[in-house]
Length: 245
Image (tube, rainbow, N blue to C red; front, side, top):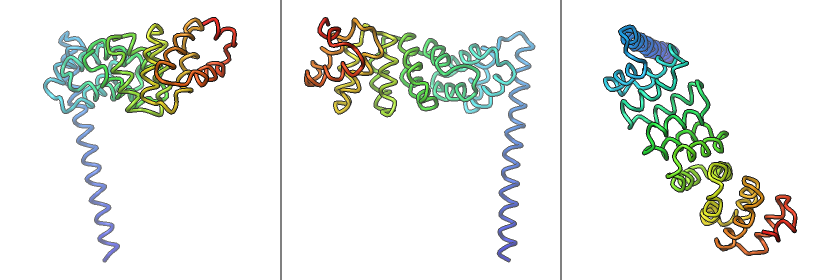
């Protein structure tokens, strides 16, 4: 009897799973038909995606995956159409595009922030969540694309992804090296126990003639001068170079 009940439950689960998969496939075909119909009637892929998501915002995954499968080279226009349809879908759009593999995560971030700069922090955060191994490049391109959100992007991303804080710092410095002093100060204030590593990462991420800015910024942030000098020398710079700064 128990075996019969277990078998019945397994059959029921299998049927339900099959039904869901069938419904998903059927809906995907429906979306594909709508998309192809609009393309055939000379509606651009951008506007086709935009109109579909305005009508079916809850189907963002189905619409985007279908569009990308049919027109992978048009990923930029597909993304712009999705973002312009409903900015509130930005995080879902970014996640879908990054997972699709049609372009690098930093390219997707660049396009998205250029289209919706007000969502820059959210865009970076969702990209960092899906591609933590590429965070330095993501931060760099995000700041280059929208430099006015430098502090908020860096601070929020470091707080949300502390394990990658040094990648974030390096990316920010490489994007805007003239802001190295404030970046060093802010990072040390957020993570005072790792001040030495902050100094070393900063020096390794910028030009040698900026060493004095980093040293002074660290001292201003409250780090002992001798500790700052020791950390700086550990990067391989010469004592004479440090004195000249």
